[in-house]
Image (tube, rainbow, N blue to C red; front, side):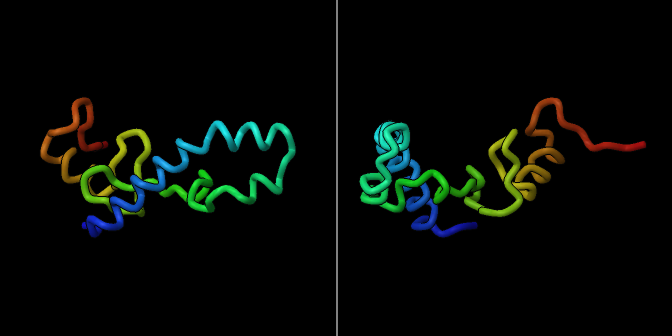
Length: 89
């Protein structure tokens, strides 16, 4: 499980990206790259990293469910995700 500070930092980054999104688009459309460079580096959308909503794990993230592969497997086997069942053929 990820440290609480790491998860909080990711949430803070997401808020910062949302705050500067409109301004960033306007500056890009105007071609003002000097002003764009003056924006905070953490406000860039490429700085965001998908993390598991439950554990904060940064790798093995499944976008469709918003959780990591490990958490997904545990929940699927426990029957906590509707419509998902173990494959067999």
